[in-house]
Amino acid sequence: MQGHQPHPATPISDAAFLIKPAKKRGNYNCGRCGLPKKGHKCPFTTNSDDVSTPVSTPSAPAADSSTIATLSSATALASRMLTGESPQSGVRPLPPASRRRALSFDDVSVADSIDELEEDADLDGSGKLPASCLWEVLRRLPPAGMLSAARVCRGWRETTRRLWRAAEELRLRVPAKAQIGFVGSVLQKCPGLLKLSLSIESDVDATMLACIAFSCPNLQSLEIFTSDSSINRITGDELSRFIADKRCLTSLKMEGCCNLGGFIFSSTSLSTLWLSDLHSLSKMVFNCPNLREISLDFSRQENDTTDITTVVDGLGRSCPKLQNIHIASIRLSHAAVLALSAANLRGLRMLALVLGSEITDASVAAITSSFSKLELLDLSGSSISDSGIGMICNVLPETLSKLLLALCPNITSSGIQFAAAQLPLLELMDCGMTVCDPNSEKSTDEEDNDSEFQKTPNSKLHLIYQKLIIKHSRLKKLSLWGCSGLDALYLNCPHLNDLNLNSCRNLHPERLLLQCPNLESVHASDCEDMLVKTIEAQVYGDSLAVENHVPSKRLPDGSKRVRLPYFCSPQPCEDEKKWRRPEKRQCTVNVTS
Image (cartoon, rainbow, N blue to C red; front, side):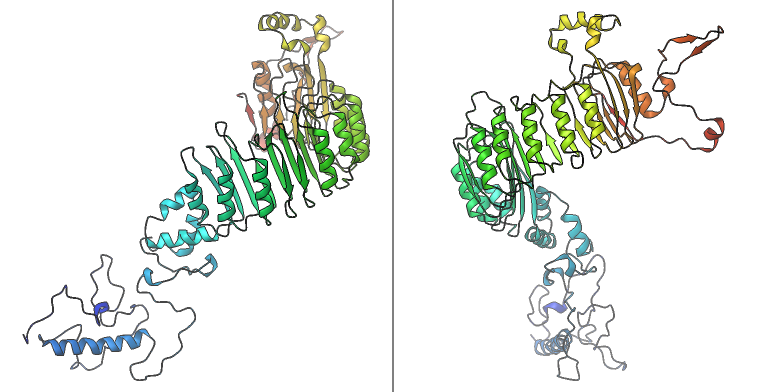
């Protein structure tokens, strides 16, 4: 029994850390005391050759008592070194603040924030990847990728857990087969969440609101988007209770609100409210004194019984700080405009009253007399005429930068030209489906027959076509989609970068001139092929690719001169071609819808 040695598999409590398995990449710790080799001086190394280290080179097998005693002494000495105590003195010095044990990652606690992470922190299983780099990589993953990364190793799981806890904004897509537990499990990982955006592909009800209210106590912004196949079953009372309970909520955007029925919103923190697909609301009360932006999008159904005039009247009286108003409803009328004008909304900057076919020039007069600081005005789908545009230009020349007048059949090209000339700050103009061909709604056979007459210059139908000339120094976006009544277009807009000419079927290539050097995108779907080629030639600067259809002119002396088309610019001289490098504009012509 005296020569018996303990079995290699037998655990030794006092010296277990001294016996380490071999590593494939080598041992970075001292084989005598177990401390890291880098910058380390082992206390067991002596200058005398007679004294040997009992752990590293035992001379002969010893008894159990002598072996345990030797290991115990080595353990005691190594313990003093691990704790910072010198072998000669029993006084323990204070460790520096940045000291951490480097035995393994399992013994190292990751810092609570990325600022506290050391660049040389090694993570178990990460291939010596610094913690700061791992943090930056994992925080760019979507929620599904974060859940998968947490299964790699313990180090990654700790990092993802701290990322979840530090997250303030989350965008999550909820599949159709996912249950409410999936959303709850994800939200519980983010106790500090401030902004939440959910794209839900299944039906949603009040259970989702309860889950959000429980998991996100400090939520400030909530967005719920629904797919075409999903149904939003949240009622007005449930949504009103949610808004009243969330005292930190400042922004709420929700789609598919067809089952609200009616609501009473009371909140002192809510500043932004977007609700879409509203239908037949019995009551709409807004007790939100700090509300600054509201968007109410009603359904397009004829059986909608919502009283828009009452809604607008209550909105203007209870929300005095409103700056942006967007209402889309086929029940908008002149009476609703008068009710809004009666409210004391001096700070209104954006007004959008869309699809109100009963809004006329008298409504424009009420708007301009009450709101003289508008920066955006959207009256798409109204019945205003060029006279209404004149009122807008007379009152808002120094503030208006965005004007949207799509689907206004009473507006002509003269009104559009007048607006571009009288509004110097204009940056966006949408005049889609304004200058339309009245014969475009005929059947296919009739359209084919009419097109033959329209190509004839002497046809009476040619008189309905109009030309549009716009010269503006600040205009950036212009939309003329569906203007089938245009046959000539001349644009001189140096800052224009987006042009929409979709369905401009009767625009002649010879009567198109685009002097827009900063143009980046041109939409020309459902246009003639020759028109598309002309647009590409002018945009890309290749005027030679377009055939010259302009007839020649014979001078009195009998010589023949060929006039250049409108879109051809003067060619540079040979010296300029030689020394100047040709520059290609990065512009895209989109011909697909």
